[in-house]
Length: 386
Image (cartoon, rainbow, N blue to C red; front, side):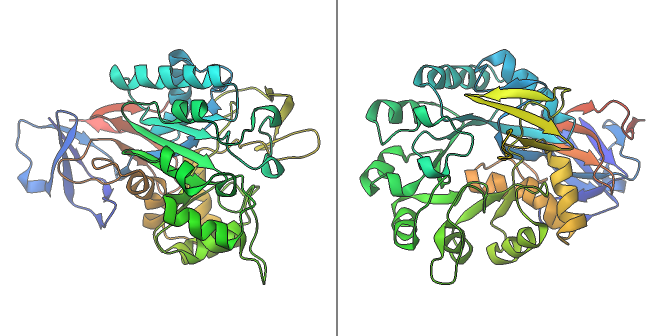
């Protein structure tokens, strides 16, 4: 029974002060005025810091020196979660990009184990490929890019609990094939795609509700050809993720997309092994990837995921895209939860999981609450008990 006091509470709907967040049995019990906190609650003094719904990252390739594609195991997932929690991420979807079907099965097994055994931080899986456009492969290994395949499709939808996000090129699948991938707790997103407006309109009707890393690895908006980008910006019901690292998308375009999407644009990191680690090179399939000055790229300068963390993404939106702080927090927590359909994450309100991020006004993370348990970041601003 915790009472979190002396903080600015960003609930996902409003910002309130002079209130306590009451946490009991890993969930938000209530938000009350300070004079309503009973003496039997353990008080945590937030010392003027901000407390926000825990950051939710739906596209994490790796961290702490580990790439999930190379090590689709429980131990790798735990290392990745640990790498990202210091940057405020309480929950994430590990990404398995286009690769061997045998490793895809291992990835599902590892995520299933985490979900079944209540290992914190993992809420499902994101398959990025293999049904993508070869012309938009980026660093995806071309030899594993496929036309629709029934056996591989069954692997994509085989996770029995949690959430599954599948990124596909809609022009590579029929509406019937898209329907075979759809299901409860499964979201379909367009990405690595050269689809035109007619194909995108059909895909939206067939069940695609999101777009992966808007602007990157997709057909662009031109005056007489809207492409994936234009179709996404004009479709009010469609969600989109974006990588706000300054390398993938110009911050003017981040702001323009935010204005166009009206509460349906959310942040992802597309993070690679250097995040939370100290490595400068790693491999993805046949590619050697270099990490220099916050950027991940191949020898011929193809962007290869990112070295972005979620706290920096929020900070960048505020500082460089001119997005108001409360909205930037929503882009990191509330909106990804709403896109996936998670009913108890993304807000600080009664009945929701007590997964929260504590940070200062510069978005330096002090720690996270996950299921009501506080984990402090080493060297960060401290919270105290009384």
